[in-house]
Length: 445
Ligand SMILES: Cc1ncc(COP(=O)(O)O)c(C=O)c1O
Image 1 (cartoon, rainbow, N blue to C red):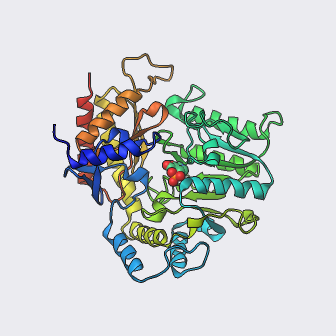
Image 2: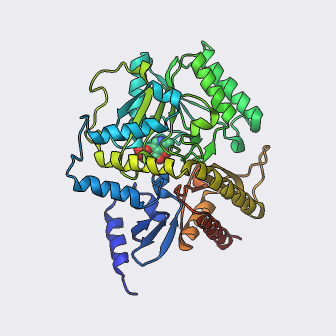
Image 3: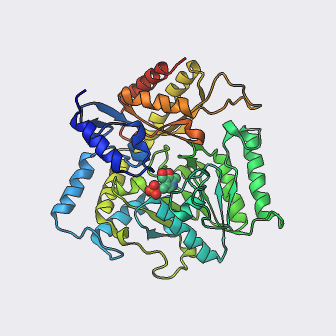
């Protein structure tokens, strides 16, 4: 058998890279070029990228306008890293970002630039609210994901990465998320939502709940890594109302959902609520590393240096981020995501009608999940069957063979996740569905 250059490159990297490496296990090839929603490997095979670096590439790969802005910036000889210094680039970036925040929130919002990953934004928010409130407890949710650094890990629902590490940030308590398909109260739907809210209320107002008054509640409006679970708007409104009544800051993690992905600029806007803080990363840097916390100025009581980090002044990311937000606004890509989402939802539900291994189709805008189940196993009292992570991985693998890049996640890795870029066309959506269908057929029986 001839060993190709791609084989050599893949195996060289594979042999050296950490055992914690994950995405590459199922993709034993070498990827090189990308243009909008498509990438190409070194063997010349093309893929429709419906993962978009876990939702990061809002405009896909190498969007020409973003690339032009970055090129012009580099050619102009401006400083690329600036710590906390003021620069024209930071000014332009903040003007652009504040221009797309909900007006009421923007009016009082302060910004903290963080070390350039989402996890660091979660770390900063915890510090900020602990400092401002003088409290120690943080409430997070089952299935929640806020990053992999020690503090962020402590906020994570998934126990697998936490277990080998042992003691993490103390005083984190977990609340049930409105995951109707596997309702923690065994009822689902509107009743599950109401019971969940009542439960949260009791945790906060029962003097014997065992949970001291928290510094913050941190939540995703649509859980991503937890398995693409959109929180019903009435639940989000209820959560906002309860936290406000108990004087507990509400932090919404929009790191994966931010900038139009779910059909509104930010996912919390679907519920018409105003959080106390918003975490942003991924799309905000236009494909370059950037992360920040936006929060109500009343909490801005921490001291200079309370959250530092070398790469917080990443100018290239600010240029690319501003260019990305401009294109999203100018081209109506938020409404576009909502409309395209309707087409995806319809098509996936049609697929689910003929594929018994799809337990549930969930999503909003351009963020969708298919929960893969064992259709032959008995259903629980809600009618849900056991998750089938092995089958989901097999389907994902076949997607790759058909030229479609997707991800799996959620409980037991049983949720196939679709996160196409906002610039995906209707024709590409149809192509995505056709490829997905083929992968299901390959794995049947
Ligand atoms: C909702 C959410 N929060 C935080 C993070 C962590 O971001 P990062 O991987 O950049 O640390 C992620 C990453 O997927 C995420 O989806």
